[in-house]
Each structure stands twice: as C-alpha cells, then as structure tokens.
Image (tube, rainbow over all chains, first blue to last red; front, side, top):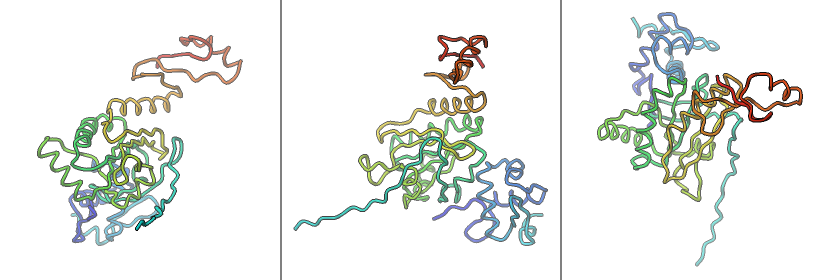
Length: 76
Length: 219
C-alpha cells in the first residue's frame, strides 16, 4: 500500500490536498510559498504538489505551480 | 547431497561524508517522498531494525521528543526500515495508544531494500534482513555531513544528534571547528593557519591560543 498525502485512492484531493489547492488559488505559486501559507513542511508540499500535478489538478511550469480548470473547481 | 550455492551480491559503494546523498523515491507513512523533497532543510535520515521491537520503540519516542528542537534548527526527520507502510502505521498507532506519543515524522517502507542498500544500512554480519541503526545527517544542499552507525542492541543518543547538528551549523555559519565535547556557548576552535604569516598574525587577533596551532575564540 502506498500512502498518499494529497490525493486519495479514489482520485479526490485529501484535506491537505485541498489546503494546497486553496493556497495556490490565493496566489502562492511556489512550493515554499504554499508551505508558508499552509504551515505544512516543505517536503510534504513538494510531494503533494507532485501528486496533484499527476492527478491533473495542478500544472507545473519550471518551479511554479498553478491550478488547472479541474483543480479550480475543487476550491471555492 | 551437498548443494553449493553461490551467493550473488551486487557491490554498492557506500556514500561518504562530503558526498552528495543518493536520491531516491520511496513510499512512506506520509506519502511517496524523494530525498530531493528535503532540499533546503537539514535532514536526519535514520534506519531502525524493525517495527514493534523494544529498542526501536524507545528510539522513536526519543526522536519524537526532539522533533520540536530539530524544527528550530530547520531540520527534518525521516525514518526507515524494511517493513511495510501498513506495519509502520500499525506501530505508530500502537505507540500512540500505549505510550501516548505521536510520531510526527515520515517513515520509509523499504521493502525492496533499495534505499537501505544505497546508504549501506544493512550489515550482513549483524543481520541480513534488518537494517542496523544508521544516522545520516544531510545538509540543505543534499550533502552528507555526518554518518553514525550503531549496532542492533544499542539505542541512539538524541543529545548527541542535536549536538552534531548544532556543531555543523555553527561551523557553516562562523567558519570554525568545534572541540571535543563542545556544546553551544562553549569556545570554538579557530582553523589552524596555513602559512607562517597567518600563524604570526593570529597572535594579534586576541584569540585564546595554547600554541600557534590551537586557538579558541568565543562566538
């Protein structure tokens, strides 16, 4: 079994995944900025962002992240 | 009948102090992590022989107790054993239930021994199936700065791990060395001079010099 912090096995973001998506929506665009906003450790944010990118909720350009249309639907 | 079996072992060179730590991607109790996820922070990567064993349980409690002190030093913890994520989770829950201690850091489930072999954590003369008690202190640039190995029967000393991190960070910040039994606040060692001119100059620096090659200063 592989534990996932940001995307659950059913493909939906977990609580920390939603927190990361909310941080991106509020303007954070780097892993460090998301870490600062959410209070999650940087390593966990990097790992979570990777999952969110793979799940199609976030897109990455170099070291910057932004929500996809799909990801935007998940955070008010 | 005697069957001769040739045991094939892949030779893996162990990473040494000063070298870049080998990257990996591994399942942990906090998701799939890469070593590179820790870039920018100090990291204490440590292995333990097995979940649900007595010495390891005392160590995990002790590591949890210094977790806040490590965070103050911009340092993360990452445990490892060759158990599964499910086993780790069950053990963490048991420690919480029976000992009242929350394990706040991730633990690698290295079932295929990929990470433990990269870091030389399995010492076959001790155990062919379990990792010995290793500690790798890795700096924010992913460089290995300290390696400690303990046998299966000896639990680690958390104060020493904190002391090493303090010493390394002091060295990086002030370009000094730390003497035996140093602890924060104690005088530090000024690096020895490389030339006769430097040796002469340092006598005027106001250091506490026992001789030209052994000088202390307060930070």
